[in-house]
Length: 595
Ligand SMILES: Nc1ncnc2c1ncn2[C@@H]1O[C@H](COP(=O)(O)OP(=O)(O)OP(=O)(O)O)[C@@H](O)[C@H]1O
Figure (cartoon, rainbow, N blue to C red):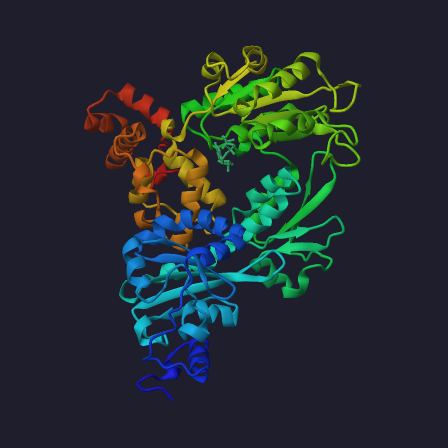
């Protein structure tokens, strides 16, 4: 049927697409239909898909380093195949634009013949179309991988497509299309949650870190209200709206809000998630969840344990992602108090902060729930309130908070009756509060009330146990736990980690995904280049730690010989071994020190 082309050499979905293209009267040597929409039309189309495009911007920006490194571009299309958004390597983008693989162009099979976007739309499953498998000759320099994108209710939304030059296309890149689609889909689910309960979102987020896992939302009657692709595959496409009856391999975690009403449940499978699930069932993090071998973190843990035994207010400071909430939860868990209620002060609009914290009477203001709301302080009565990002509170809200801390009573908005509350306050901020006080942006009297015990958490670049921490996080959180090669560890050590442990965790999860269960090599560790700093203080410490580890390996753990090799005294070496948390054990013989 086709000159020089044998369809039996093609994968079945590609061969079928060639047949459809032929039946549509398309000719391989013709020019493809190159109509492209621009100007106000494309603006209107993007506006109509605003939410989809903005989620794609976030997901694509995470993928950007790897996509660019492989000389590819990632595209988002609508359900008809019109490209709405693209991101990636500029040189390839220019080449792709010559065949209208660009924003505004439509890549439906009826226009462009066999191509990955078109096949994914027709088949509603991932598609991989390599070089000469493209129907039109002019597109055969391309290799493309696509995956369909679904909404919360299983409705088809569009396609994620990754394209590159056929000669340079690395097969691992193809796996990123379904991954990006899955990530985008989970963001939709989470967005939906956000409208209902912030607390649900936070917990869901923790679970959805492991995005290929089945993820469900159930309403109070256990009806399935949302499901990602992985869950739909397990439960069947028709599970939405049906009552969920857990099978043995599912763990169901009810998510409650602070008034103990069950809003949503999440059901997840696999042994890894089960471990996480049981932790969530047990309640908040404990000190056992806080990993640290460097003196700074051990000191912080020690102080936090003491804080748990007192009822003083605690102020936790540290950069974003250093573990402030983790510490707050651990202090609470060890204190044996009642509920733990977390409030992100920067996420609540100034006008709503009083009603959020102190509650409101029915009909107190327009938009209020009919029955009124008890507020976070009442919800935390007998327990702990965690005021995250306290440095971002407005002066007005600070004044109201100070009143509660002084008088130990809350008065709901619209009410004249004060209610007595017994709440332990743990506050956290990434800001320098004394400087904020100096600048007049934070009330000095509130600062003194909050800083009963000050707990400062070190930034990751200031910690000397990055190597061990990376190993620990990989074992605990990666979907397919893998080992880090020494070169990959060195690469981690050279980064300055502005996002701290949260950023490290994300990089490790991506690396273990790319390594597919094998040893993680430097090319699997994808870090934004601008943030790499060879002169970072962490780099110095890492080099010193590595030199010590190598000297110990070379001397079979003999301290005197190692100290001589390093030109330092034995006592200094002992001190450094202790401060870096290096363990002297049989592992030293294998070339991988214990992490
Ligand atoms: N010492 C630690 N051991 C293991 N995991 C940690 C540790 N510290 C932080 N993490 C993990 O790092 C991530 C970020 O921690 P957390 O949310 O507590 O940081 P944070 O300082 O409150 O961040 P932000 O200021 O942005 O809210 C979480 O996934 C947490 O479990």
